[in-house]
Every structure is written in C-alpha cells, then in structure tokens.
Amino acid sequence: MTAWRTTVIEHLYFPEHPTQDEWDFQATEEYILRFYRWGSSENDDFTDSPPVESSTSSGAPVPDMTIQAKLANLRAERDRLRREIAEKNEQLGNQHQLQKELAQTRAQLQKRDQELAQVNAALERVRKRARVGPRTS
Image (cartoon, rainbow, N blue to C red; front, top):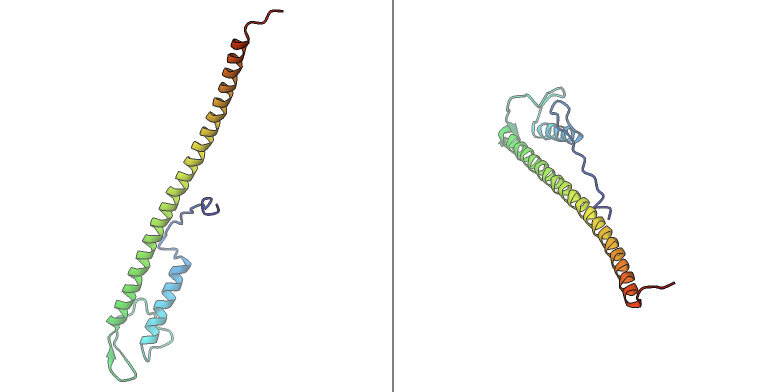
C-alpha cells in the first residue's frame, strides 16, 4: 500500500546550480584526472586543462584521451540513468493517477450498489403490499 501512496516530486534541473550527484561526479572526475596524471601540481584546475600524456610505472605513455574517453563514457552512462529515472518517475506518476481514478470508480460503484439496494428494498415493500391487498381500517 505504501508504494501506491508514493508522491512523485519533480526536481527541476538548473545547470548553474549543480546537484549533489553532479558535485560527486565532478570530484570523481578530478580524482581520476589527478590519479592518471603523474607530476601534476596541487593547484591544477583539471576541468579546463588541455590534454596531457601521462606515463605509467612501466614508462609507457597513457594518453589523456583515454581518460577523457572513460569520463565521456561515465557521463553518457549518467545521462542514460537520468533519462531512465525520469521515465520511471513518469510511469510512477501515471500509475498514481490510475490508482486515484480506480479509487474514485470504486467509490462510485459502492454508491450505486447502495442506491440499488435501497431501490430493491422499496420494490420488495411495494410487492409485499400488493400481495397483502389494500388495508381497510
């Protein structure tokens, strides 16, 4: 029953005011860039820096493009998940609306059943009077 009473809250998206998830993603992105860049300074701003090749412990260069590709894949996955969440929220909203309409229809049916019971009772009283015949007093 709790699932049916769930209310969908739509969170508006403003790029100039990032969500906590976006802050977390940005921190992860900066961590990945810092981890793969050997010899970078503490004050680097990784969001606007040009691509630089890094080297691994074996001495082979690791192009920053690989890291950027991984980050692009993470962003694409994040966007796909956001779209999926939006679709699920829409479905939940539709389901909530259907449940509301179903409850209203059930209430109308119950009211009609009560009216029908009253009419049947009145009809039975009329039939009983007709069988007994007119009263003479």
